[in-house]
Length: 248
Ligand SMILES: C[S@@+](CC[C@H](N)C(=O)[O-])C[C@H]1O[C@@H](n2cnc3c(N)ncnc32)[C@H](O)[C@@H]1O
Image 1: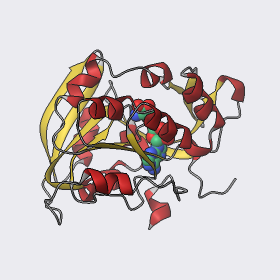
Image 2 (image 1 turned 120 degrees about the vertical axis):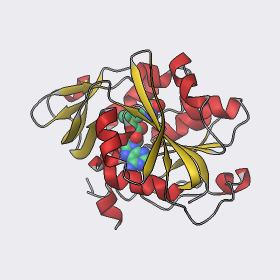
Image 3 (image 1 turned 60 degrees about the vertical axis):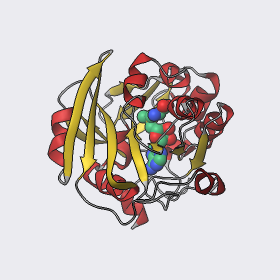
Image 4 (image 1 turned 90 degrees about the vertical axis):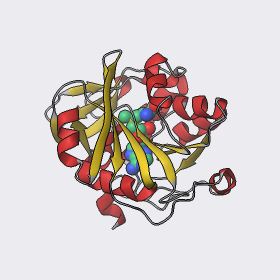
């Protein structure tokens, strides 16, 4: 498999789980430790905990690593401008089927509405994308409009971990897909990494933890992304990397 194909996109077990709406599915560290992935919840409708996040969203919303799209679909149903991006073709297809707009693209590639998004979401552990939280926060700062809002779901425990993991389904046995870098952060660790960000809120709901941050760095344009601009950028592209390093 080409090293430029992000591991999530190439993981058959992830695509199968999204198609069936069922796990079990895990991220497995090299030492064998397993982090369960909540596929059933991701494939269900947005729940009351998700709504605590969506109610805080401002302006046009970019859901990074949108998975099967429950949040984008709920925002669309509310008449909000929202775009999901994900490297997994199955995730993007499912998001569109639910009525959400989605693009197959890595967060580290060029995206529509750069420096104009009102809110960026990093839900369900997606602060782990790329395995380098500082690089991801820098990238998100460049996506947001000046004073834009970032909402991050953090780990329910105080952890600051970077590891190589594989997506592992029941059918994979001990093999799993290709390894890729991932990070897991509790709120204290997130706040340590978030230089140049101001914490505006932090809350717990249904055992899940969240933090809302505002970038102190002004980006280049204050104009919100237009719905048409989002739609016209919905062509399918082959993502070029799971890691920010691959795009520099
Ligand atoms: C932990 S799952 C979260 C799932 C999701 N939030 C949901 O509602 O189902 C991580 C998601 O991020 C996507 N992803 C991984 N690397 C990415 C990248 N570089 N850019 C965009 N999405 C990425 C994966 O394909 C996967 O769908």
